[in-house]
Figure 1 (tube, rainbow, N blue to C red):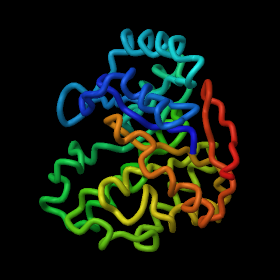
Figure 2 (spheres, rainbow, N blue to C red; figure 1 turned 30 degrees about the vertical axis):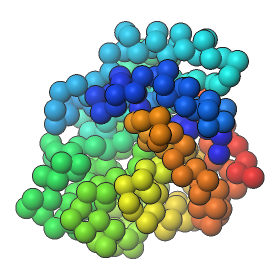
Figure 3 (tube, rainbow, N blue to C red; figure 1 turned 180 degrees about the vertical axis):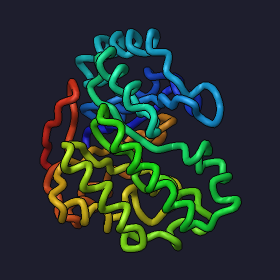
Length: 265
């Protein structure tokens, strides 16, 4: 894999790495294309997860030009999905020259699963089910994104993680989410951070990818979700086999919000 379409810089509060550091490491690792996708989460559980677009866009445009002979640098964002943000998402997408927008659910009833509070008074099953319910509601209200990010993100932070998770257990919600993506021309992200966080699968689980393919899904974007240079292209050597085992022959890159299919082989 020579393209990483999900990475963060210090324009996101949870990264200390500059865009240039991430670009330089991507070059060192032999990547041909990257898309920087910093967090933009409105009403997040703590302040600081909103992009300063008036600095962000010019900075990335300058770096695009500086490194144009060494690597293709694309401009993206990871937009925090919540049901009430449909109008705001459209406004942002129309205002700035994004190549790619990831839509990701990071907040469940006011709490990020990362901090564990989502599970204080819930079983893992209740927490996972509520996250998928809210994800589906958000997708039905928001159309201005290109790929659904780390669909089973919530599983990283459950008390028992994958021991309480399977496609079959949550098929009622997962099928509706996958059908919605397919019907609306949206991609599904393969996010290798699942392996980084100790799960036995990338996001999503292979059974979810197989079901997406079975339902007619074709568009898969690939990202490391890297927040540090050492995370760039994390475990990308596993991706080809992982996707081929689910029936895929291609993955998808985006430029100017338009999909381009690339052969895995």
